[in-house]
Image 1: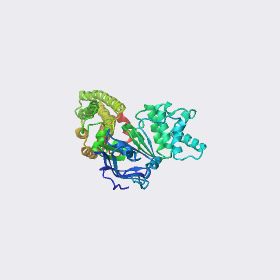
Image 2: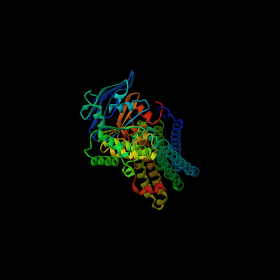
Image 3: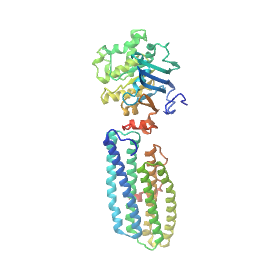
Image 4: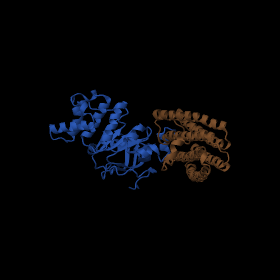
Length: 270
Length: 236
């Protein structure tokens, strides 16, 4: 229960019990060349729940998200230190293969980015390269189940050979979620997954997130405060590379402990 | 209101205007209580009519606050302290409007008071009216400053109102028993005293809402306690 590992003044120990801590970050720092992007972030993220990361542009929330699947490795000049313990293992350890890590940690991006291939192949791609299916029948099964979990099956079952990019924006995003689910991840990272979608497509994705959280540990970066309030159980507020406050979503949006959180979520000058 | 201004300045203005309307309603209610209990003592029919007249303004203000609050919920999607301010305004407007109704009811009954003999009971009513009006004043002061400590102070005053109520009730019952043939006319006093006590309960609720607005913490039991028998009467 006690979070002795944190250095953030706003860290609340409340909210445990949704699932155990899936990810524990201790003293994460990220620099891009000489510029500090995030500083000394310590946070415990629970399994089977949605954690929202909010904050103004450039606050470090996406940088933090990218730490969780080591996407910062691919950025020239990025230096990450600190420990990220996922199921007891430090993912920043040099022994760990990022490819293995990414099969466990799926990611969905702001702009839907299906491969320029068929709907079927978009989903089948990951399971194929990770060798998750032993036969064509098994692969078919994975494709169907993934599309069902993403709430897209009924809309595309008759056109699995259509090219992924021919779907609507909302469908493309759900296709990307299905693609992420297909490799049986445990954690799904979402970086503003609805910012390019209309309100109806957004509502579908939110409904989907609510459903997925029963099986996955979901971390979502969003600029929509209402969305964070609707979909997440826990919310972390970042500002200028610092974790200002982390706690139960309900408390963050009704009665935040920190003045800076209050000013941000109510739309005031900081 | 405390804290920095909103990036959208119209939003800050709307919140301020909402607060101003609540305070205007509160000021009106204070005056209505004072004048209604004064009218009972002085048998001033004109003053009583004035109180009855003011209730219309009160109802209009309540409608306006609700309209503003609904609009803000729809257009601004307020969060945190702003959300508490908007929700709180709706609750406060409802409570203050009820106080206005009760004061109007007292004013109406003052017109039916026939007996001038019982000066002491009448003085008691006026004093209770002043005490209740003061209680509301303090609650509104707590609201204006978003001060939870002052709000809690209001809760404590309710005991004083209740003991005044019990003492007045006892003396009224004796007074009524003295002249059974005047029972009907004198029973007006009972309802007047009861209405003042109900106003005290509403002040307690207002203080609780103010505490919630200021801190985000709710204090339990938000329903004013009242015996079922007189509630309907008081609402007329």
